[in-house]
Image (tube, rainbow, N blue to C red):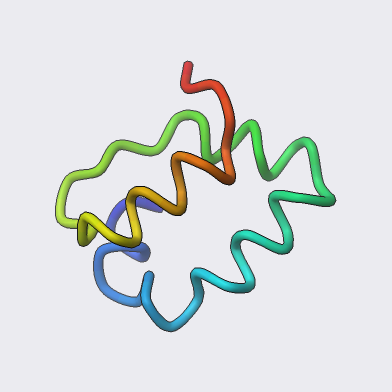
Length: 54
């Protein structure tokens, strides 16, 4: 997931936020994502969408 978001996060962040808002399992998945190569602005949006990290 980190590789995908690092490569195409800007293109998909709107969809990711929408899915995280309505799907608890997807939101949980995002909780395990690390920033790695994800741009800072996209990472900030992911952190907000995912809630608690694990």
